[in-house]
Length: 95
Image (cartoon, rainbow, N blue to C red; front, side):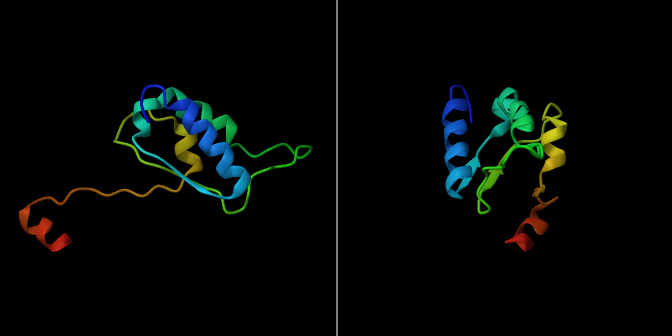
């Protein structure tokens, strides 16, 4: 993500939702205003509306740690973290 990538991301997500593809948004911390709009987009639809999301659709997002990341999006997600090892010895064992 970054400057001017919101339109491309929106199109990729819409196509993936329709055809059951996977999308990854790298560096989503660079486009927090767009990520904030995603919360409303991915909320459960009302009972009178049909959800057009394919069952195989997946959205992955990478992000550097930041306190400004929208809380609603975090609460909807499964989070995976990877922290660097605390020293050279631990770093060698991680490999």
